[in-house]
Image (cartoon, rainbow, N blue to C red):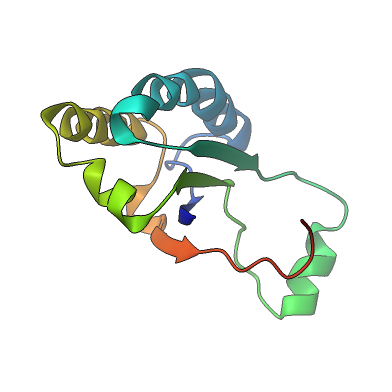
Length: 124
């Protein structure tokens, strides 16, 4: 299983609530609509929570940076499936449509992404 990890920062001027609402209510259906063309096996949104523990986490890590507003995970069965996602006109059009929409709510310059291979340590 290949997974694209995409930690997200919201665009300047958006609240976290506005960002997460847009991501969940507008962008998620767009991803779902293009999933077949892009051969996406699974799509998960992890929305950052604001909790009383935030200051403890920052202090423990010795940092002061603002956390990401969420993390997207997109899964493919293999690197071949991932490559095949953009091998068709339909797949390339889907990638363009998603990137165009991401510009509406994601600070792309502060939101890195990478491919990973999962190695389960605890769990099924």
